[in-house]
Amino acid sequence: MKKTAHLILAHPRSDSLNHLLHDTARKTLEQHGFDIVESNLYEMLAQHHPAVEYYGNEIPENDQQKIAQEQQKIKQSALSIVQFPLYWFQFPAILKSYLEQVWQPGFAYPGIFENSPMAPDNKSVLFSITTQSGKEAFSNAASNGEFSRTLFPMTVAFRFVGFNILEPFVQHAVAEKSEEEVADIVAAYKAYMEEMINKPKPIMAPNKY
Image (tube, rainbow, N blue to C red; front, top):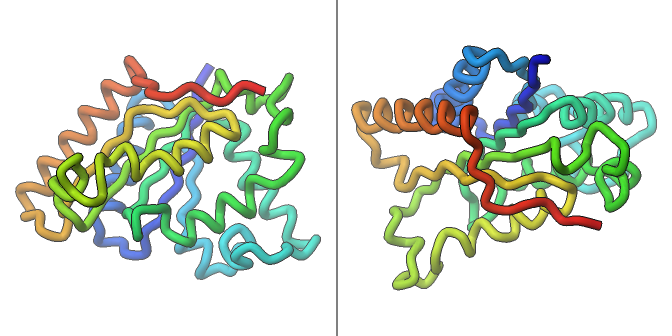
């Protein structure tokens, strides 16, 4: 039985490293027989999609069908890959909005996973993250502390709704990379994806209720 992967992209520029990594993940997964469903959040915003349009406000009833389509992508997928730049040590606002609108009560809140396609043991998430700061900015010697501290609130959110957290792929100081360095990053990500597909590396199990 083929597996499905849900790829979420939260970056506005098509010429960015984030888009390149997103495309690399899609192609690698397809080569391994995955079906792919995607949520390109900035494209969705341009189309006034309710998952990113309302920013926390109540969604009109006639738009709920579009939200249900995003929920179905999550339900059917064994793996989610979330590609985003780190903004102020957190998800970009558009990604936070997407999660708030799609993870609705009765869909993603505690208890919904029992006897459903979203059972925690069936779901994993991988964060692929870029930062403007160098790696040295995320260390015990820096005021920001280890990157795991920055990542923690994001992992808590996904664990809360039942995801296993896979080891993230993080690239620092991306604005300073040369074409050769970008090519090396893409190759490293492809190798990481290959390894993750063959032998996933969970770092946190989902919450149990």
